[in-house]
Length: 167
Image (cartoon, helix red, strand yellow):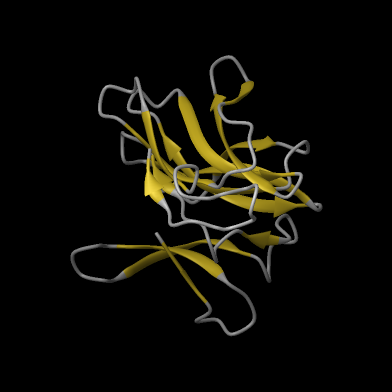
């Protein structure tokens, strides 16, 4: 999957063959599909399901953030999870078993980590602090999540932002 403004009027999502570069199909067009207000593409990316058939990405729909799952075979939307309690969603990533999606989200102006359980239809907040928590990645066994944060280097008392590190 890649994002492009090749059609000039919007940022669209395309499926391409990684070996040849041949574009297979347009998956999402924000100009032609009023369903999405925008794709969260500047500081975000989507992720493939472990089976390699479904793809999840973050978007804005009717002014609210959604996780959207599409089929790569036909581009059809399989599932949308609206999360109106969040501000923006970034970098969704599937758990190795394909049952959960971890992501960063802005809430009240700060980024925290969340996991959405697709089976239980439940959102869980993993972090709740003023530090940046970004770009989650599941461990191969699905028991842990690595992420980028400034919690080890930022001094909030002096308002000094620190470097990002892995946690």
